[in-house]
Image (cartoon, rainbow, N blue to C red; front, side, top):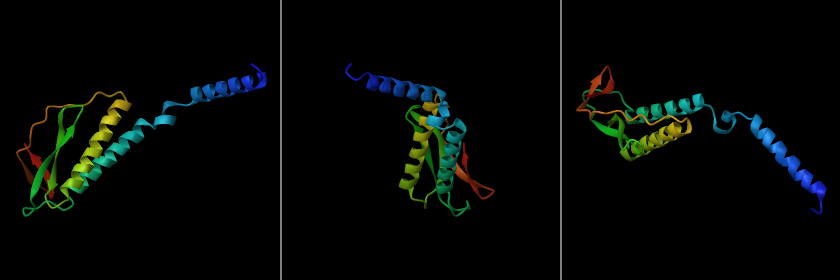
Length: 134
């Protein structure tokens, strides 16, 4: 090579990069598992709050939506929702949560949880909260 100092510079820079890379922990690049779990919990709470923005009483009409996962080819759960909420927005929030859950499972090498879920029969008001009835 015509410029040996330049060659040594690139080699040195590459070795420094490898050394820096090796000294970093995985969480430095991807975030910690506990942070990811906290984000998932926050999203689930957001979905639950949005789905029933009012207290449940005998006068409230409720519907049931499936939380569907592509990795499970079906529902991973159901959620009761107040029929007066913006259903399209709720569906977007549910889809966002499910996408994050699937990404979490892949990132942390956790197989998808695909339980056998029974379709709820109805929604009942129990202590001011909407509860699914099976």
